[in-house]
Amino acid sequence: MTSIDRLISLCPPPPIAPPTDWPAVERLLGMRLPADYKQISDTYGPGTFCGFLHLYHPHAHTSWTSLIGPMPSTIRTQLQREHEQGASPLPVGPQDLFPMAVTDNGEYLFWVTRSGVSPDEWTVAASQARSFQWYTYDGDLAGFLTAVLSGQEIVSLFPDSLLDHGAFFTPRAPAAHLTAVQPEQSSAMASSSDIRAWASDHGYEVPVRGRIPVEILDAWQQASTR
Image (cartoon, rainbow, N blue to C red; front, side, top):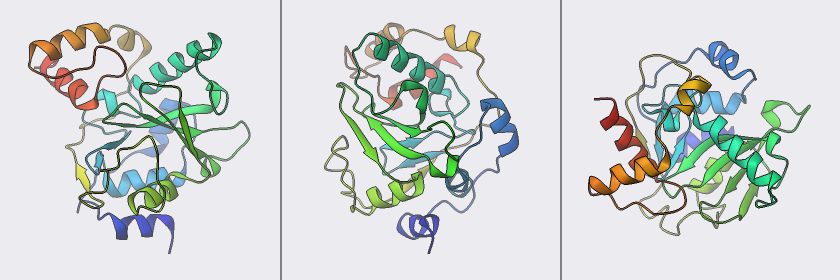
């Protein structure tokens, strides 16, 4: 039984997931992607594991959780800046970290993409939202998800209540088309202070510092596009 088979058995996917033109996605990103990630994305589609972990997807309903949206580039730029300032002790160089998921608490999950290593051999790393603590997993994404959702792997950055309701996946309506956000579009997006102010005005509890929770980013984007 493969890691994907074990994941599907542990956490049933929705009956239908949108197809993805992976050659087009890889052209947009300028790199190849791991086979297990593409299988997971094709099986589950965009959505959330255990109401907590949002795997980036090319058809994500919001650019904040899109693999081809602004967030991967934005996060890598932030990591590079913190690394140059000596503020963030990274498990590897920032150029070898590619964001591919985010949690509701603001932790980012990364592929460790060492030069010369096949995408199918990329491992997993995660950063804590409001500190410089890191977690690493010496295996692929499918193995990581299976280990975490089965309770075999405990990630100290994740809440103890993660599996209180078992392993489940909540699908989200996919975006209709693959649309990459260009750098000039990304830079034109609202600042975090603007989003915090909007959230406060609309009754959301938003931290004054640290990462803004995904559900607030999602609500802001939906309101701003109406």
